[in-house]
Image 1: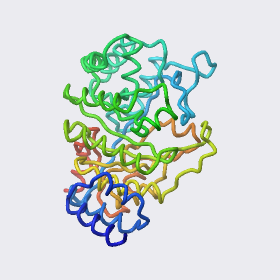
Image 2: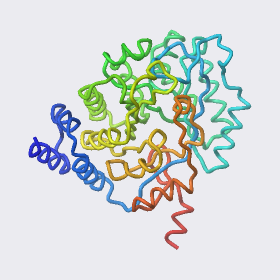
Image 3: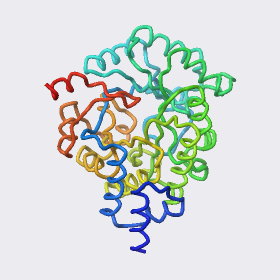
Image 4: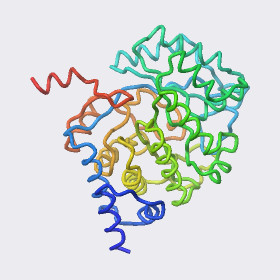
Length: 365
């Protein structure tokens, strides 16, 4: 088995595509150091530059009212609950202004599956943001939300995407993917769009010229084979469209959820899965570190396990925090973390274009 793993790692590091069976073999391996070495070799081949990146944005949840009832979610509340809300525009504008003051140029706009909000409400929301803040990218509405908006509005998902794009939607976040295997989805979130439906919405968005991220939340009821199935499905779409900007994987946080009795997955399993994802997703340019669920120390380690990006400063985050995990940072600290891993820190936007001209001038002066 050891020689088999070594051979797989060498071939993957050299750029040969792994099969699902080979990917599963690597996930079943316990040689974390060897996995890290191969994943880091792939990252350095794809990103030979001497810097690693991060961005500044804010996760604004426009509503916590949700009819999905996902077993893994500690954030949502049912319609009619006293704690339910739909964000006021004045509050939304204040949050965006604070983000701009901290150097951000994007908001991540996501919310629950609200039973009464139709496409007109979402169009007005995006249009208002773009009119008031024309230079802010709206990274909004996961495929799960797109599917729900289409159902409420009695429209096709493609029509919903086209109308939101015309209103000013800039990019599509990869939320709601969880594990793209219907056995898992039927147990965890039976009211959400199927795995095929989630992927089809991404395909449609890419066909319309849009870009967006892909995610995976793991460490709950899925098998290792289902993690690989998830990666394989993402890789196939990326082969066809090239529309995914990045892959972000994070571990399930069980606190305050219906699965609170589950053992929380730790750094070892996170780093192993990240490394295998880097080896398997040979057509993804970027992998993010999940410091929001793992903390900055593990996030720093992730830069040697396949990640080339530290993700967002995440000025605001509510969903993971509702499950009891609450890591926070600031720009100075996230830059110091990257530098501590042996790289220069560079800011980017959601499309992985470098935007930190101020720092670049200082470094090259």
